[in-house]
Figure 1 (cartoon, rainbow, N blue to C red):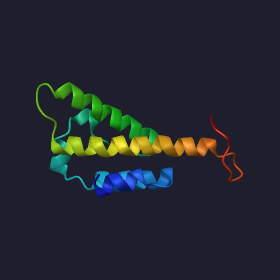
Figure 2: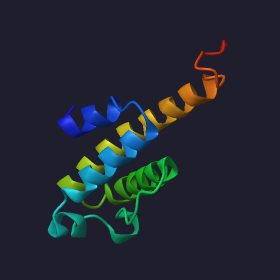
Figure 3: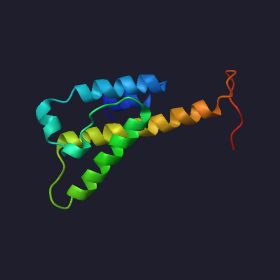
Length: 109
């Protein structure tokens, strides 16, 4: 796991996770982004639903293109990161749902 993936996996809040995702995407050079199919290049990350959206788009393009040509390193790197970020967003949402609003955790089966 690279440092960006680790930071996403260890994010304590959804806002922290979103900030990490935005910073990570900003590290891509224009040529790297150009190597990713245009329909799955992240254009904005406003909420955790965007993490899920772009992860799904990247995964679909990855699977569709794999038989013909291997995906670019940038595509693979972004897909790996967004998969971890999406998983973390789901975990954070579950933790928020389990909180009863008084700072205590409710019982979950």
